[in-house]
Length: 465
Picture 1: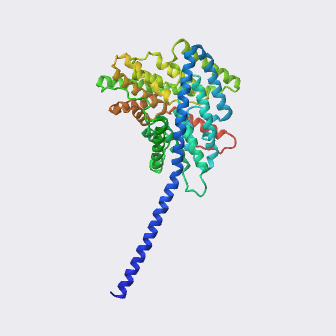
Picture 2: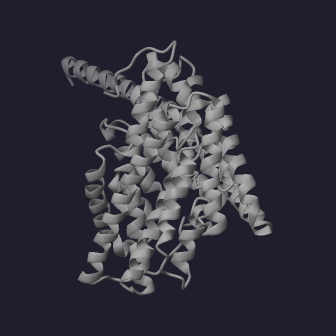
Picture 3: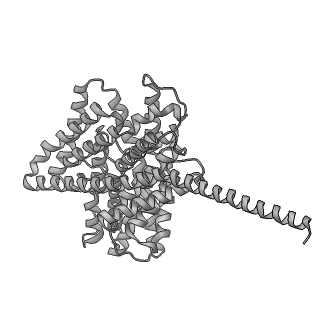
């Protein structure tokens, strides 16, 4: 072999070995960077799942304690409900004003604000203080009979956990997007709260962000999986609403699905308008005395209904949904949907912490049950109407039809009626927009962002315009 050939072979071997080393280093660096970037998301998802399971257990036991108290002496509702309304409001007002309400509008606002220069604003919306106050205020409210849910609060709690983790990441750590951290925390929180991984993913895409999903899809998928598996290990594998019997529907019954969805969508939009009007009214009440008088009056309305008419106005409504779905008592009286809506409206506007997801589902379910009674539908057909009503009312509140349909589908594992649920979501979305262009969450988000802009010491932001 010639010297020239040996030279070229030597050069080839050198370049191949050098190239292999550079490739291996590149792969190792990329792998190390990817793992380090993922660790905050993994840690946050595990913590969120543990907190969500503990919070769900506390919330459930608070509801049981409330029913036990009322079963012992029903007149106690006139004592515990005003106390709960006032105390839950005071805890929030005193320690963390942005822990009030659902928590989802606060997370949406935090996502839109996410930038280094807005950290001060975000810390008002998402923090460990907010998380603790959220839990305490909501437990006080539900213990007193407040018509609220824990799912929205779980989303804000999860966002607060991820926001805290983002704040303690060392400067030498690979850069992690603050926006993605908040988004992922919210998705993991909803997944853990409802045991609905697909719902958590769709929620992140449809409700929380306008950026392209490819920028954070890996983080969301892994966070939802970790949060879901951890929650299932702690609380067991379960469906939020079990396995209700359903039936295939003919054209007549399919028309009833459309009717139920239309009524639910309209009712939800009207409810949203009333909630916003009450919140505007409360802003005109300047003194604490005026606020207490308002809260006491609201509590007495709810307590009087519970004592003299029916206790369906109290609590999150999950027990009511399970009653109509899994017993022979299928057709709710006409006042039941009104009681659910009235109770949630007055509980949600206390200024305390409490969500609207579960109450919205129970309101929709009671609408479906009541309308089914008009047409004397069978038990399995009524169950379909109740699930359609859940999707319709939740869509009317959130204006997120895909999230609503997927959540109810995963809660019940009734894949055979997916087209009925999607139809209900579409119809409800159309009818809700007749009443109001914006969702309740979007309107509250805008309100919070304006408040933050007006607060002293915060830089102005026009993200809400």
